[in-house]
Amino acid sequence: MNHLGSWEEFKVVMDLGYAKHSNWFVLHQVSLKTLLTQTNPTPAMLNVGRGLIGSHKLGALVPKRWAKRAVTRNTVKRQIFNVFSKFQPKLQIEHAMVIRLRREIKKTDYKSARSTELIKKIQDELHELLAKAKAQ
Image 1 (cartoon, one colour):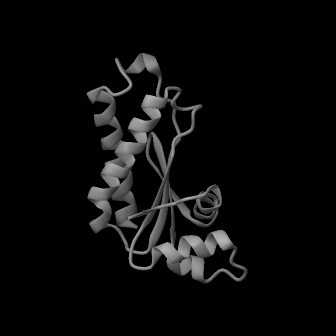
Image 2 (cartoon, helix red, strand yellow):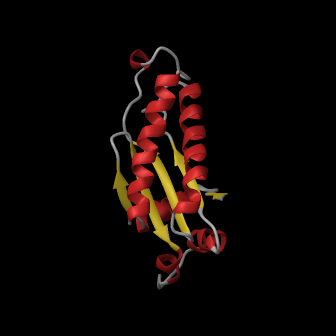
């Protein structure tokens, strides 16, 4: 698995890809075939496409407005990459994906930024989301 590197690459996937939703996350996904059929490909499209041959590319987007504490944002990102690595063999090859947090994680809802309840909730949401992507 490769990571999306620049904001332009994230933007390409979010603009060209289709979206799946769960309660907490949005998954934007674009295939290599879609990137190759663009009439005027940008350098960012070519970069994303180059890394997709025979593998996946993943980006995690966790805005500060939805997860105020850096510890929480880092926990969410780690869980995204962790769950994705377990799901990767089941997913379609040659797809670029951006998983984006779309709901606030309030400090008052969980006793700590790395609580087991929070991690379990994040993992459950990601499993649900990636199962939808697998069904596509």
